[in-house]
Image 1: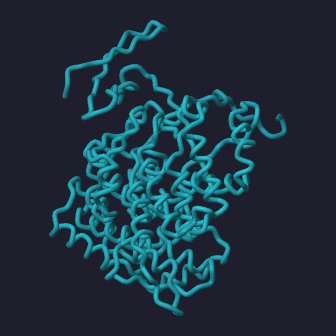
Image 2: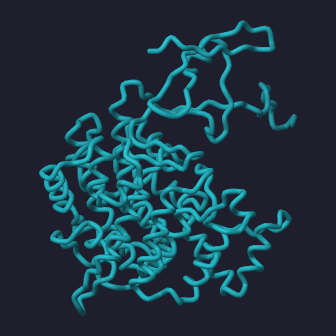
Image 3: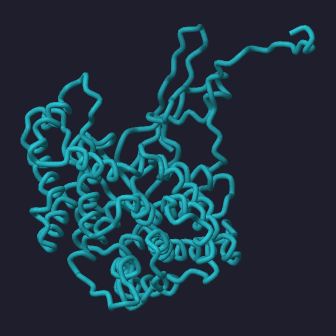
Length: 431
């Protein structure tokens, strides 16, 4: 523990108080205020926890000013180019990249758990065909705890490992089942001789009528989407998973809570909003009109998919997704598709227009991933479910880290109370 400290002074006559100053590997120092209430009788006030470190973590680091994202110290650019999704999963869960034997063992364990209990199909039949896939996922992922009683002891390391493998393995199957159910097609069982992403695409798009042909370019594009969305530090859904887990809830319930949070349009629905915006603009000929509206402070129109709350520079994931986007459009011959031509023109303007460049409103990962998913044939309603599938490993890694942290306590934020002061109840006749 460092002997560095921060001194908090008060203007109300209270004596100053010292607090330890904590330093991470990289990033801002943190003032340890755990004893603040005990020493002063005061709380801090931080709506949205924008200046609060809720935990210590060794998993993911973001520097928004520099445009950096690292998993376990590895830059996302290196992982997305040199690793597949399951290697990235192994890294997030274990802290190190696997060697050849470890990769084979991990892949085998994941692929052996891709099937779900046959009774799960009856859960789907209880939903309307037009149910949103996220509503279905919240329910069926939470319901997994009813089938796997042998891995619910959160204090048992082996149980935690088994639950992690099951969740990573079964999420593609459940997402594909949600899609198949919505379009009235039969469920497609997993095939474990395929890669993780190829298996998912087959479960999504194969039918009993003909054999599904794997396209390596498209599979790699989806794999990259998974890698780029695997974790993103203490965002809203990850914090939800940690908060739910702090109560001792089982991992399936915690991941279901994360899915519910991700469903919010301010969090997981950004790429869906991008596609809706492109549909609203409609044609390249109208781009100038909408660019003008985006610059007008009195106009409520916002250019979705540009800029990022965390990244004040170019989103590092967007650079990678941009390459993938153009590869996919080229592979499928979609460069002249109306919507894709529109997206490419918007991208060009945003990267060259002084207004967008000066405000650093660059295309973000959601802009490109929405375009790629549409090109792959994934319906817009399923975009957030794909996000949840990819983020599941990050949620599990964060949940496992929290459970193993000896300093972790049940989450209990405090408040600044602004309601009525103490008052006595009058009989109803006198009110």
